[in-house]
Each structure stands twice: as structure tokens, then as C-alpha cells.
View (cartoon, rainbow, N blue to C red):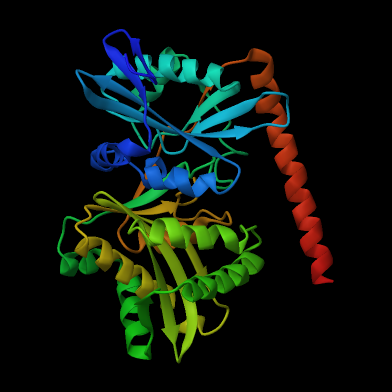
Length: 373
């Protein structure tokens, strides 16, 4: 076998290189569960930070049948790291033998890289897939601080999805009455939506994001991350920036990912001014229209509260109501799973990480409070 390849029964494990970028993206983009976070470009984006991308595939009879775009991050322990496949792996989950052999391959590469664990969070709903993962040696990871608290993991446990098969007229008719009214109200009031064309537009979006973070009490990355997003994702047609404007002022902005026949509304931001002209509704509709024009069959609104009851009262419930207004379907995935590779190391990770994260959040809240005084 060639370098970077080894056998696992009837399957051959292959570590992909830059020369195989197109074949990798073609497989992931065509898969029903394929996600931009498993694309080649996502690994390049994360490589500008603290992550090292690794791409592992299973071949059967010379063709790719499973893929895991892994991100490696070193830990503050000698020689230790973690491997994470965001929204992966990508495979036909109705074939348990693929799950089994991919787990063997992940164990092998994880041990080579000094990983304490391999974390996955595939975007699948079927509970029988979870049973197959457990049978292959995975364990359920912590899902956050409880139902209704946060998004439930590294990636959102619950999302809302819109089927784009109907015509645009039908999609608009399927929206809730208040949502249709607000879309049209924004247009009547003079709100316009345009595509961001320069890095300065991304700076405008980031200014809105800072306002949103301060208003809603969450942390955001430095602007460098959004500059890198502009260069790697927007610049290569994997994402688009939208800005909603009113009377010459940007009131809202959003970044939407595009990969294969799917689009994902990923980052949203808004001003505190002129909220009565409903810029977010028109902007969201224009992003749906764009996804439809690009040939997408699915528009993913991404994270919502795990409590989807109409009378839910947690801090994310407003997201559910806003996204449900576009007739999006609530979806709960099976969650995160870990493949432990070191018993002691995994114990430290599982029980030490939440405490460290809680301490960082307390520090961030304290810092924000001091700035406010």
C-alpha cells in the first residue's frame, strides 16, 4: 500500500493530502449529512488558529465511503492532544460495518497523535445510529448543563431546517403570518439587503456583532477570525456576507455558509437602532432566496434552544420562535460522542474541562462587569 494507507479488513484507510482536496470535497458535499465543517476549507480556516487539520477516509473497492475531517489540538499536558471531527464523520450511517471500521481507523490515528480522545458530533437524528456508535466503542459525551441550557455541545444539539423544494412563492406562503408581515414591512419601510463585497463590509458586520454580544451577554472571537473567514470561505464561494441597511446605516448582518446543496445561517448580528423596521426578517428571507437560487435543497438555521415548547422561557427561546416563523422544522441530533483512548486522560478531560470552562465564564462576566462600571 502507498504511504498514508493501511487496511482494516475489506477497507483501506487513507490520509488525504492537498492533491486530493477536490475528491474530498466532492464526497462530503454530496453526502446527505455532509457539512461545511467537514470541508477542506474549514480545516484551512481552523489551521490559522490553534488547530491542525487531518483528513482520514475509508476506501472500499477504490472509492471513498467514509470521511472524517479531524482537528487536532494540543493540550497543556506533555505530548497530549484531542482530535475533533466537527459535524462528522461523513458516511452512510445505515451501514454499521462502516462505523466499526472507521472507529478502528480513528483509534489508530488518535494513538499516533497522542490523543486522549476522538470527539464526533454527526448531524443525524436516528437513535439507532447512537446504538451503533456505542457498540463501536464510543461513549456519550456531556451535553452541556442540561436541557434548555445553551446549544448543548461544541456544535448545536438542536437546529431548525427548512426544505427548499417548494417554489419561492410557496416558501413565503408557508411562513407564519407575522413573519410574512414583517418581511413585507421591512421592504415598505425602505430596508434593503446587499451582499458584502469587501473586507470593510466584514468590519461593518463585526461592529454589529460586538453590539449584539454586549447586548446579549456572549463572547466573540477577535476580528482576525472573521478576516480569515472572508479570505478562505467567502473568497472561495463557501460563504456569503449579507448586510441589511436602512437610511444608509447597517442595521443587521449575517454570514451564511454554502456547500453542496445545503446552506447554513451561521452568524447573525444587529444594531440596537431602528429595530421596529424589522431588518432581520427581510435579510433572512433574502438569504433563503439566495440559497434557493444556488440550487440548495436545504436551508439550516442552525442552533436553537433544546426546549422547543411554545411557552419555553429560557434565554434562547426567542431564536426558536423567530426561526419557526419561516416554517423551519425543529431537529434534535443524537449529540456528541467520544472515543476514549486513555482512561486516565479521558477522566481528566471529561471532568476537568467543564470546571475550567465555568471558571473562564465567571472571569469573563466579572471582566464585563468591571468595564460597565
